Image 1 (tube, one colour):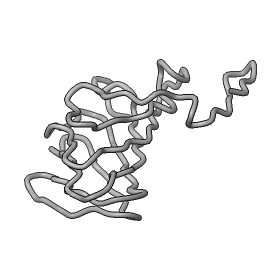
Image 2 (tube, rainbow, N blue to C red; image 1 turned 90 degrees about the horizontal axis):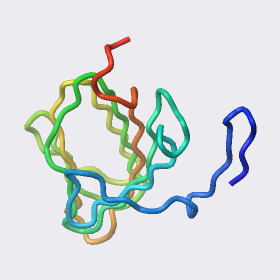
Image 3 (tube, rainbow, N blue to C red; image 1 turned 180 degrees about the horizontal axis):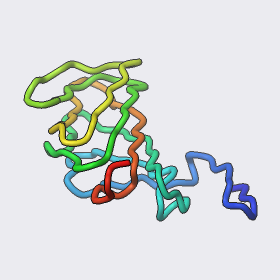
Length: 127
């Protein structure tokens, strides 16, 4: 990793280990590329996720956080506010605060997607 004294850095994705975060099941893995504990970020949580077939995250919502998902590979099912949608490569999903959602890999290969969340803590006051 190349790091500057001002906190900026360049990191290769291979340097970051896979993690299975709470309420993620069956091989729902993420690499926390930029978040407070891995990069000292204050407003952004940025990850790449890879869900093996049948992996999923439990249905949930966020109080104040907004999320963007960008599907890079594979396909799966995205539940948003009780409606199920097929998602696949090049789909971009925006989730405002308060919207119940879940995602699962219903495909035959790994479902790979980027996730951007802001703010990093779900109990901050909306801006």
